[in-house]
Image (cartoon, rainbow, N blue to C red):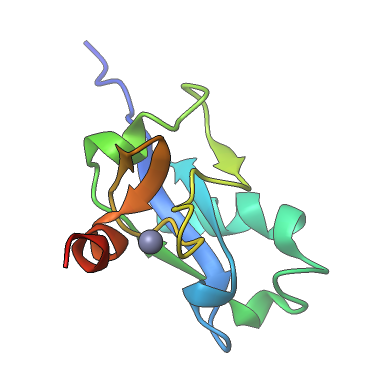
Length: 110
Ligand SMILES: [Zn+2]
């Protein structure tokens, strides 16, 4: 039996400014394919040149994988972000109706 290929999660961002300035969430089989797939979407705003576009593997954790909207390779341009810092690189939980990442939760608890 042929083994079914599973999507992996990647983040794509501008390597000069870093993921803090905007990053997309990509689901694809390899980093190479993910980079090629997402470049067409981010070219012109997130990055200008192919060389600026970096793709990094993300762990296959539940809070990332549940954002996949298809079983085929695709890009999420606006992943669920923390309502406090606007980032999505950390796991978020709902706190008083607001989506907050682990870092902002720690600050809020003090
Ligand atoms: Zn946050």
